[in-house]
Image (cartoon, rainbow, N blue to C red):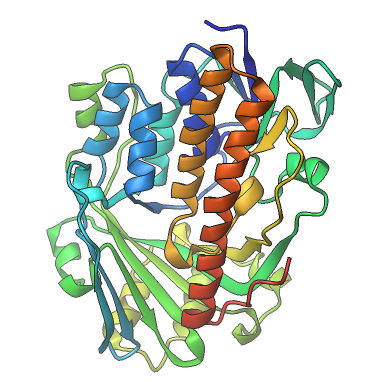
Length: 402
C-alpha cells in the first residue's frame, strides 16, 4: 500500500467507484457519507449505463464484482424512441452497438443493486452520518475535512463527491453556480409481478429509453429494469462475498412538466405523498392515450417522489490544489441525455488512474491538474448537450451564460 491517503466526501455512485478503484490499487481511502446508512433515502431507480460507464466500472471494480454487475444488468436493446401523447411515433433512434461490451454497451441497472456492488469490500472504509461542513488546507501539507458532529479527518487529497449541494464546491469554487432548470419530475415504478404485467405494456415502450411528449411539453419517460438473473442467485454464483438485496423487475416511469404548469407551489409539491403525486400526474394526462394513463395509474404509489431538475453552469479551469471535485458536485446536469451517472463514473476512472500515478511517485498536483483539465472538458460538454436537448424537447430553461 502506498503512503497516499485519499478522503472522499460523498458515498454516491461516483465517490464509491473512485474508492473502489483506489482500493483495488492498494491506496488508502476513506469515504465520508452524510446519510446515516446506505439505504436511508430514495436516490432513484433505473440507470442507463453507456459505454463510458461500463468501461469505467470494468476499470475500478474487482473482476468478480464487475462480472456480477454485468450479470444483474438488463439488456433492453438499443432503441430510443419518441412518441406523441397519442402514441404516434415522432422520432426513432437506433444506437450503434459497441462490440466487446456487455449488452452491446447499453445496459439498464437498478441503482440500489449497483450501489450494493460498489460498496462491496469497502465496509471498513465508508463512514456514515458524516456531513462535511468545511475543510482546511496547509500550504505544503495535508488537507483536513471537518464534519458537522465535530469530528475531522486528515489526508493528502480531498475529493468532493458530495453531490449537487456540495459543501466542497461551495468553498473551493464559490463562483460556480447551480441553477433551477425549470422542470419538475415525478419518479416512480410500475412493478412487473409476472409476465402478465409485462405484457400489458406495448413492446415498443420497452426499449432502452422511451420519451412521450404531449401538450405544453408535458412528458413521460419509460424504461424497463429486467434482471437476467435474480441478484442473490447471481451473487451466489459469481461473488459469494457480495450480498445483494432481492430485486424485482419493474418499469421506471417518470412524469415531467414545467414548474409553472403544475397547479401547486414547490412547497406544496414537495410535501405531497406518493399517491397524491400520482393523482396529480394523472390529472395532467387527461387527454393522453389510455395506455399511457394506465401505465401511470399502475405506479406503486409508495415509489413516487418529486425532483427539481437543476444544472451547473460551466466554469473555466481553476488553480489546482489538494482538493478537487467529482460528479454532480461539479457538473450536475439535467437527465435529458441520460449521462449524469456515466459521467461521474468516468470521473472516477480518470481520477483513480491519476492518483495511482501520484502514489507511484508522480507529482500529486500535476496528476490532479491533468484530471481536472480532462474532466472539465468532457463534463461541461455533457452539461451543455443535456441543457440544449432538454430545452428543445421539453422546454428546459436555456443554460445561463457563465
